[in-house]
Image 1: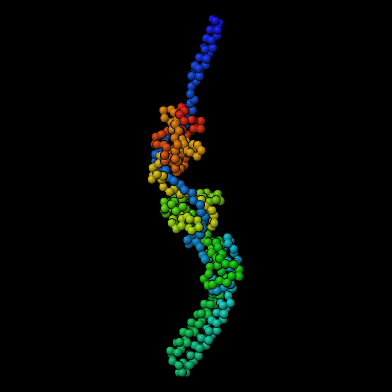
Image 2: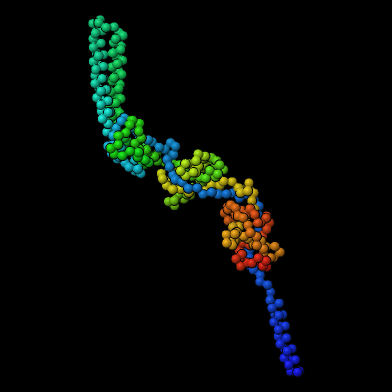
Amino acid sequence: MTKWFAVASLMLAACSGGASDEAATPAPVALVTIAAAQQGALTDRVTLYGVAEAGAGGKVALTAPTEAIVVRIVTPVGTRVTAGQVVAQLGAAPNTRLDIVKASTDARAADAAYARAQRLRKDGLVGNAEVETARAAAQSADATRASLAGRAGALTLRARTAGFVESVAVSDGDLIQPGATVATIARNGDLRAHFGVDPSVARALHPGAPIRIEASTGRAAFAVPIASVSPIIDPTTRQAAVFATLPAAAGLGVGEVLTGTVAVGASGGGIAVTIPYAALLDDGGQPYVYVVTSGVAHRHNVSPGATEGDRVAITQGVKPGDHVVVEGGTAVDDGMKVRTK
């Protein structure tokens, strides 16, 4: 009996010792870095996409001086041209040739009539009025002939400025009317950036505001003021437009793809609660942070807003002065004790 009582006492002591050891095990403590939530202005930055195009005064249109047939396009789209270089060769249309023949015949007849009137005036057979009428008719006919001949002689279209052929509106063999555009030349160094922008963003932009532009070719980024903002919606893209003058020193060409970055005002009407972006964690699409109070981390679901640099605006879930975990958060559980590095 005594022996069994001793064994039972030993077993009870062993069990009591295990419970004491378990109770003595300290709760885990996570080592973290914290930062304070701050209240202040946070500017939204929007990325725009666009292209370089000829400026308002940077396009020169080459037009047909008279009805003509396109004989040959000498410089296709994208060709670099110098002032005076041939861009297109036109030929007189059949109607134009008939007009020139008729104008020449009419001019010869009018000149002969004027000469006859002068002779008759010397003989006293007609008065000054008849001579003046013949003279006016001859001058008009001569002017018509000279005009048609001049236009027919200008059927070789040359670039009036150095630049690039931006567009060609016709093809070889086309019959074109007087004044029809044959090609457009974009002047060197007179370029602007054209960006598409959401209409709601466009309403927040204004001329003179800075826009940071970067070319897809890897050239150095640069900042220029916005030249104009067009609220007119493109029916195809459903976007408004932002324009900025490109400096010649940027070395850009027509058609180069550009990326622009603009500030469109502060979040929340100018004031926002911001935290380091590194504090944000995600649980199945739900953003959250750990807020440390009295050495204990508590999970707060949050609604993030705009970002600027390494900070993000929080519209719900954090208040100014809260200390959030920015490093070590992945090792923290809700309610866990923490200590700072």
